[in-house]
Image 1 (cartoon, rainbow, N blue to C red):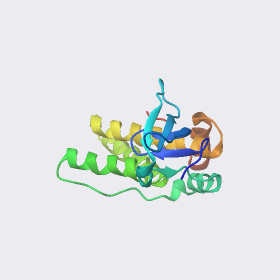
Image 2 (cartoon, helix red, strand yellow):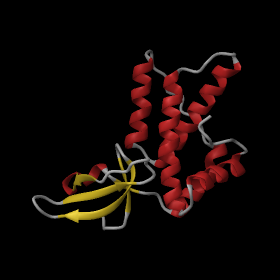
Image 3 (tube, rainbow, N blue to C red):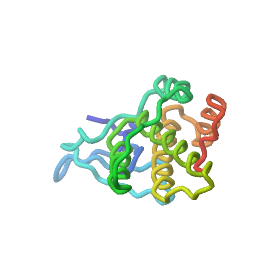
Length: 166
């Protein structure tokens, strides 16, 4: 069971802080999403905590940033853009921070390839990139106890790549 004050990753909301644990009528975590514009307290049943996971440790976060330049991209492709989008969104929701960072790297590469052919990247590529980037940057910022901008800067220093959403 998670404790009040701990940071966890909710499949839909991303990084949240356990604000309170309510026991009546059933045990429920009261969670505060981190980094949203208008964060609302959400409730999540303790009985479903298997769908939650702890935020990665500081050491894991530092190792992930160091590993980024050598990280392989995901080569998954599907006949339809909708099925491909579903695959990557599931990785973002249900996967680890490493999975989200891999999705970021994958879609940064795909977008760059499309732009190199003087084409406009599909909107779905930019949407997936934005989701994966926001999710991974928020988790890494909490793990490292720094701002999202500081995490971007760490990625840029490590890999020479701009980790912004553009």
